[in-house]
Length: 516
Image 1 (cartoon, one colour):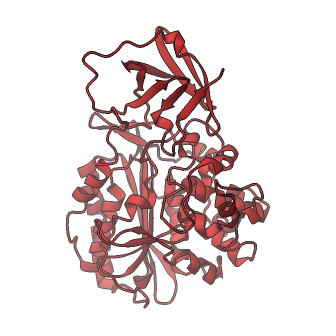
Image 2 (tube, rainbow, N blue to C red):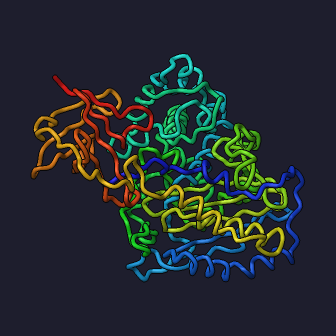
């Protein structure tokens, strides 16, 4: 199975921070939404869902809305599926259909960490190395100081793409976390950089302190206490669900089923699968500040710490205005100035998700789609917020948000869209390029000749990548996988005893030296 990767694959809060109508406000006083206002919004949900599905033609969608009443009781007011689980299967999406959640997993995982913090087994300020003695970074001093919270707030100094390409070419979690030490590092707390494997390292450390693997910890501390029987942080559980949504990508203007994402390597950052009915339990617990049906699930202070702004994730000058990242949550404001907590998730292999919590009015909602990231759940979420707060949409959210996503879903690579040289220089004999090239981050890269063409393989997956000659010692790889943007074209350049592969170059790690 191909892994999920590209230059802008793991959008997470980087883009989702731009999707807030931010006007300020403190959100400190609980004032339940007036019943008439709430009923007005509920009456529109079906028509809103039908409209966004007609506009985008996405195959399937699921929508839930919960309310915390003034007496503390949490009610599910809407939990419903729309459309199909797959374009080639008439089975309908319903409230029990299991979706992969992608980066929405970060917020659920943060609540698991908060449980462990409340139990006294770790702390948001605990250095990762206290639980993982082998953990380090390129600056050993920083490697010893970086904390669970630094990694859960994407402020560790690691680059945003850390580990993603290694996952894409088949390396396992242990290898990827060990090789974080190769990557360039900014000072801790100096910048926001959305890092899946940084957060994964923190989750693994917390699980180590608890004496369990991550998936078992989530099950024991969160899923079982909340009665989330269709939720798991193991891909194998998702793969065996009968009622599950399959991912779709858009090709030639139509939605087509694609391969299924296997995210176990980064489970704390993106490995949860769940249903609407299960997510309503978690949203209700969050609105209850860690309580569920009269029982305390998570310590209030430990959970509140995750919801404090830790670092700016979106500037006030950008579309939507200012937002921050806490520990696994985006923190922003609604159009009416109310404090909101939210996160989105997306796999380019056909899944996009979004949730929003508005504690001041006791409202939470989640939107799950079995379709590639084009901004659908975020646009729907902003429209729903408008309807809840103002009675109607304040603008067309879909057009600007879709434009933001479109800018990140075009062809990738320095030669993408470029015309081939009219009079290219001839290459050397292809056998001259063949051999084994290495670097410490990715290990060996093999160049061979098959059928009169260079073929490159790298990583445990060893997926053959056929190279096309471009000019002189320059070749290109033009991927045709589901998890690559159509039209992408990556440069492969041979210089002396080295080869530079642009696909692997995000953090300066794409240069390999030939074996003697």
